[in-house]
Length: 212
Image 1 (cartoon, rainbow, N blue to C red):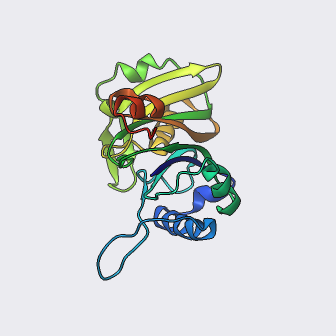
Image 2 (image 1 turned 90 degrees about the vertical axis):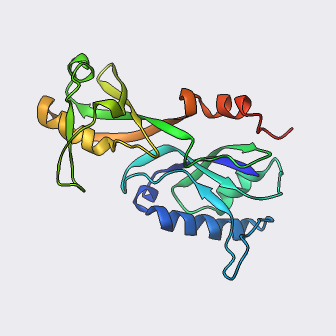
């Protein structure tokens, strides 16, 4: 199996989650590598994507698990030669068993530019901090979904829960913009963390899934 870290930029951020999966299926066929299929009446390529992100959100840290016996060192180069514009593989790991990229990724780090600098302690100390949830059409208390906030210069970094429990960064940005002001904020998903706050390399090593 191959665990791939990839980015969605340069227009690819507007490709919906299911269409991304379809693009990966076509990419595998263009790569001309062996891939395992599901059993049953309508078999499909066994690919596993990390949890969906909001449409239009740029990301440098998405994951896909390929259920393939192929273990060539050229996987990353081959993928990038065959993938759609804007989707680019960044790292590839050979693993010996399934990695739950949908369930075991628990938080994500976002880079937010364009907000006015403010004292993050005003948010972190507020147990009743809420954002407007567009889907629910109401305010929701989300302080427990904010793991960390900090500024580096005038750039805000926000580590938010992601996966089974998620705080969309655009909802957070809209709230911060309304309270503290700013100028056309932009959001980039920089990194994700697995169970226990582990990086991908730490997670793979701890769970002994890296193929020798």
